[in-house]
Image (cartoon, rainbow, N blue to C red; front, side, top):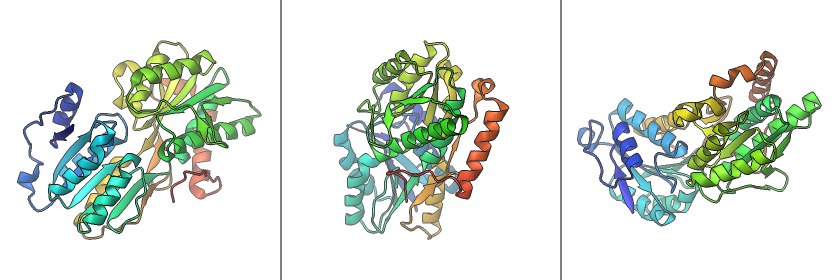
Length: 353
């Protein structure tokens, strides 16, 4: 089933939360006001309101709609069977630009880009090699390295954990960086903080198998909590909310969110357990890409978000700032600077090039 969502941010959120198929009345940023240029976005099967990269990408497209007065709409995929038809639908609208989100859409994006060389595409969190496709990817391992170091420094039990929605490069990249950050903390402090849920050497670990089932997230997190973990990094879209729920029910347990600031995007009842978030500045990358298409400088060179260019970062500690000592905060600043300078190399099999 396909859902066509109009550009209004409020309307989009309401529509997804209600699970409704009927699109709201178009507002000032629809095609009627910008007939010369329009853009379409196709989500992966996680849906638009995923508190993750679909949502951030859509926010970027809405920002571009306001900044450039262009027409934008999102086509929401609710299952894998929607993916290819939805990309075809986006192209069929006649818009000059199509944004797809996630590795699941790589094949469909390549097929449509090959068949429609005059349409410009961008894909988030995946690399598609075609002259009219711009990959938008993020070296999240750099920011996750900071998050891992932070988690090791804050943990009271000496056990932290991570799990993913699926064993895919955009997911495991977070987990690689997290494990490496813990390892550096252990080396620097002669500590023995343990990471559950991911082995970087074997590239194997704990995965729920989807990005939507919150109950799975809660079950995975609870299993880690039962083993002593007091900080958990879920890399699983909406599934991660289940980890937040488990943390709320267990005093002393906190989570690290991904993609956007979980303190802001998660329901308010989870704010007290969000230690930090590993951020991807997807919105800014989308706006920049749309701008380059409008001014004629679009190309297929990948945008790679890093600590150096502001594409990735960790969020504020918000309500849990008291857990982070001044000494630990200073160490994080030093590590960040060393990564930016190339003194510390954060690398793995999924590192974007």
